[in-house]
Length: 305
Image (cartoon, rainbow, N blue to C red; front, side, top):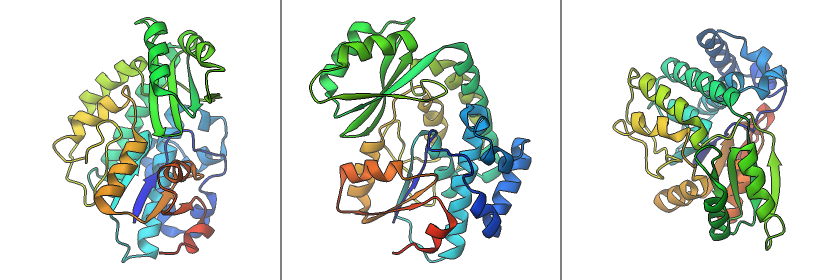
């Protein structure tokens, strides 16, 4: 069994309300997270405007995914977990679920990450564009032509063989998009995001996060969790190094799925979070695996193993 933890962008208004009403463990997690973060997460779940802001949505999504995990473990106590992958932000609930980060310390660290990244978002107008059926050689060639230190642009997310995401300043992303539009089979789709995450625009966040994570207790995960940044397993010795770099370096979700699939022979993936975006990426990598999304309480009750 492989677990997937959703990243920023998966959020939808009203998410988690059915869990909060029907699952006592989930309710306990959300109430505790609300106290840690200093704002009402249930209210945040219902507020589409707050869910557009990095400082609110990151703690909300982390608590949501971890709350679903805690409910899953209570309902299926003998569940065997071969490993987990979180997309970007999703690495935090994955590490909390694995015991590598304590819940309270993990949520506090994640809240600081969200605040740091919101500050960087506010300081620079940036954009992200998904590229379907990407020609990586061409994208990298054009990137080298248009990217500058003042207006950087580059691949931020290697999601699957059929999708990457580029990010950077608005000016640089437009230049790159204009040059790539109409080239081969590639299709470009602008994304509604708060900032161009996983680019050099978040270097300040990385520096600030490095200072904060040095104060946090970390442990070896109880089940394998693969790093988006380096495509290696997280350990107590590398977590403090990887997580700060993660905010400004590209994610390699597709590579992580391939690694965990090869290492653990996973035949069943479960996504814990709103929607099924990560399962769609998994399907593009291996159509034979079983895929189940758990974004409502009803779906949790209908899981099959």
